[in-house]
Length: 136
Image 1: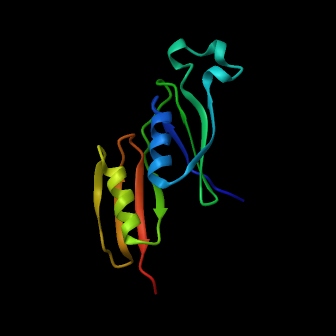
Image 2: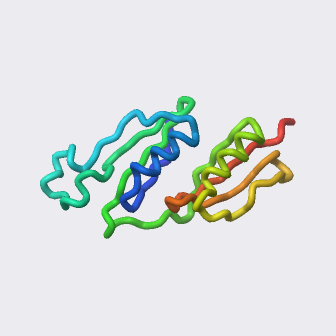
Image 3: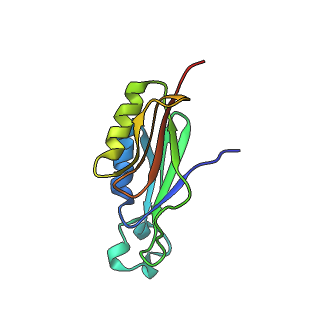
């Protein structure tokens, strides 16, 4: 079994996934636009080049996403994407990237369980937790 986060965007999925690809050292391995599907004829012209499905791979894991039609889009609530890293430097770097034009919910800092932990909602309105646990 594999559980993969699936992120929905309000028309800026391609921009977000290119940003995540660069920031996380990942690779976009698949992207399809609405234009490339059987439903293209039923898709508004301004939505043809939006993403119906994309997949990013990093270290054997997958992050997926799409652009939801504006009338179906809902800002994420009640869930966070958690990134666990092995070094404080990686935690700081990723947190800084996600914080750029985002909203810091909890500044990255040492906690009782982590060398670094922080929470941020990025510029694309996706909530993230960055965690670098203390070694026993």
